[in-house]
Image (tube, protein in one colour):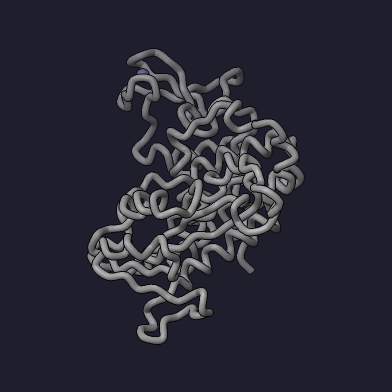
Length: 320
Ligand SMILES: [Zn+2]
């Protein structure tokens, strides 16, 4: 029997936790966060010094690896952050703040704060268009939860999708990467610029037969679509024409949002999408296991600092 992943020292020992993070953020040794110097840096010792404190002898200022990351200003021990990151990275449908609160033994407020910061670290900075080199790109949209900022129209309250949050997603079939975003509506005028920005002209576009894709489809190398309204999910003419890869992505996202997060406010939805995109794009089918996924997540903690205000909205606890 192999040892439990959770028994690794960096999950239990604060010094080991710092060393673990330092090795990933400073692969070539400590760098002064104040002046960028890396030559004249010393590790501070002594009983009164906080763990992981370095001093730069160029600018004479102290710093730790937490400065400029999502960990900055947090009182949660680094080893618990690493536990949280591992749990979030390895839970396919996500993990609620309530669960993190109980499992890590931190307050619900801290757990909420932690999970939103970790989501921020999962945000991809990659805007490379999908389908570069003529690959297939699936595009589809889905409706989820309730956008409370939209007032119901007339007597049709609760029916249709008008009042729901709308999500647009793209999958590059060659690389297996997904990119999703919240959209205000599913009109051609809204979707077209987003698709143009995220899909290469030489790509082969795959959608359903929704009218808003018809005109836009002509801007790409080819446009295949299935007749969803007639119950066709894979084209009878060409088996490559379908959006089933994206349906798979939406299915995990929806099960997570319903079962784990019990929906969330419109203003937070993009953060949850970043979380589901991240796990999907770093999944085992692409050779990325739980440990590697947590490692990649950790590389995203730099430069993603949020203030407390942006992560604790009204009713935060109820939504957690
Ligand atoms: Zn310095």
